[in-house]
Length: 530
Image (tube, rainbow, N blue to C red):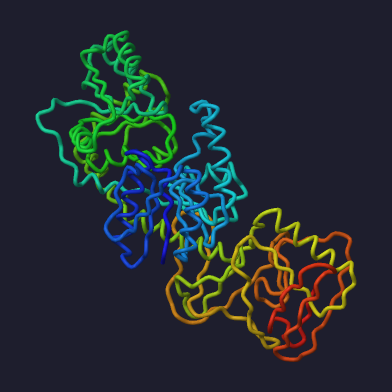
């Protein structure tokens, strides 16, 4: 499978870069036969593993995504595009696209963003959701939020792929450091003020269990934070550090005796799983994503108050060796190869779904077993422009009263032509080619199809409002996707049982003639509707 990865938005060493880095490495280890092409900007913040082709763009992000990315997909004849963020190219692509979603914080916590950032996210992410053939969510919480806020995506494969934490197995612990608790301050959702308040409560109670080290504090916030620490009288027990280099951060994290992570909003919460895998006591908030990924192995702050957080800190520090060992065992489930497997499976599902949605032919990626039945999902309407164009053309043909044997009105958003299909003898059920790929519904997991090698039968379900209807059992033959022509009586014509008859399509007056559809009209006794 040839996949183009849009990593142009990755800039600097942040959580997006970390996930992209480990995703590519896990994918490459598990599927070395896949042809991966990653597109990056000037400062990607990660290094692609050996065997992955890197394409570096020099133009600005918007221009690169609008022009260079689609051109690369065409030049490589890519099977799919995978974007690490919803904000990717808005141009039509010759292949299906899958996007990765971390969270919807800008929708659920808009007060955390500036007006400009909110506008940019709503516009660019909204376009990404509208054109996605598949969405990878990094937690079940994110998947629920997405389907609740964007119900139109319920017809699109939306699956969960949990990031890994096995990279911490290679971390070196800092030596010679006194015991300390670790907290994070790079974003306003990390609740630094709340952590400071908890340490003030501990001091007022007569005991500060551990000194506190806050890492990742931006330079613009450092002075104000130091002032606040002084006001609380915590200068001797709280240390503020900037964003650290990878090696230093890893050593400090691995040497911590407690990780305090009372974040107000998370899509996954990678530091929580990293702490569990390292066997470090963990304190989290009641954020749904953190509770989900911690799996009951962390002390949970029930309310957002300093005294409640102080109680949770005491609870975490009282964890036994057996409890910490159980947490480490649980965290073994989070691996990057598993994340890559779930992501790759969703990309395969999106390829099949995108082919049905845009009527593109698809090369089978996974073969189906003998006797398997695949139910085709109703295709989504691609865009209003092709739908109205098809409606206007069909209405013109019907009202002109032309006596053609059939009308083949094709309305789709893809660039590839609809393939001509061979005629099917009357009374038989069309079968897919050996190894036909299948789609999958929404839900957790990657929805991979059981391998096999024999032909399968395709069952097409007619659904009210569906964009595809068929009188032959083959999706898309002699049909108009998403077409509604009000108040027009359309004649019904029975094609005589002459095998393999090619009937030309009559053009509308003054319109460009539509190419004939060979063999599709030669089904004996078939009733067709223009």
